[in-house]
Image 1 (cartoon, rainbow, N blue to C red):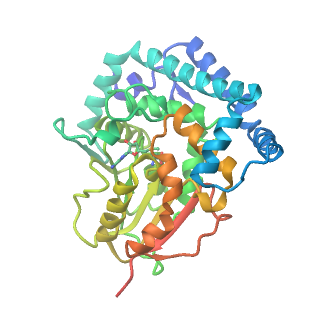
Image 2: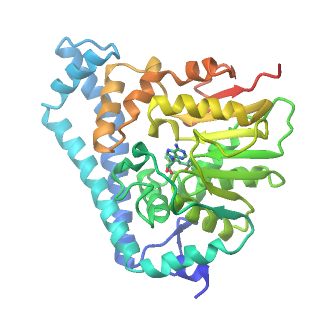
Length: 363
Ligand SMILES: C[S@@+](CC[C@H](N)C(=O)[O-])C[C@H]1O[C@@H](n2cnc3c(N)ncnc32)[C@H](O)[C@@H]1O
């Protein structure tokens, strides 16, 4: 069986995702995606208004500080509507992982063999080390994804399909990644020969960058070998030449001053703040003077109230995002500036997800 036939045996869902092993699983996942859109995404605004009203009527502080957040949580989680909302959120997510993993496991050997075979061919390359030491923080089962990113051999496929459902259609045909990549800042002199994507997962932003800069040498790195293996296969399927490597963003195995652009899409909220500081330092080191760093992630608490903080804390539990509360409080713009970047003025309207842009000073 060719690589493509093994992975895309049942075709592609929404243009790019390897379809699951049975039609029943595909239908079930489509149901979960619709249910999430209807019960969660469409209700986010009214649920927010309802929660704020409950807090205001109870005379609670709306300040986004830790004490007010704890008090808000105590009050809001006594409310039956909200209890149900968060229960539904958690259960739908548990259900989609269970279905996706069981479905992929039905043809696990074929899928793993296809990933092995893909390693041997190009365009592009994938490199990893079976003895790589994964830091403890990177073994968390973020998003309650079974096995997490690093400990489940099918995590690349699992994450990719899970992200499709989680994002309720926004990731279909790589739409979201393409939009994000189009807002990545280039260095001011426009010279782009090498690009690095930190925490690349399935490589969707990496491939989108290659489409925008077809002549650039592009690298995607991730702590998980399973992720870079799948990212390589996904890029192969699109005939895109990209180098994927298992690597820690805080210990980059690249020379000083060798990249024009570095991107981190949704990496920073998944690491402790102490690691964020190291990643910023390493990014500055590998960028050439004038090179740009675009960091996409959630907005910080400067833009939110106590409900925003409560929502983040609930996400930390229900979506298993242990590092989100630390991230939103950390003020990543300030960390980048203190780390030596010359920051662009933050423009919340320019990006889909908050984008912070810094340049390596020329002198
Ligand atoms: C939310 S995903 C990133 C999504 C991806 N950038 C995209 O555009 O679709 C976070 C990724 O960061 C990786 N990661 C976490 N800590 C890391 C680290 N210290 N160095 C490199 N990758 C890391 C995880 O394995 C995971 O694949």
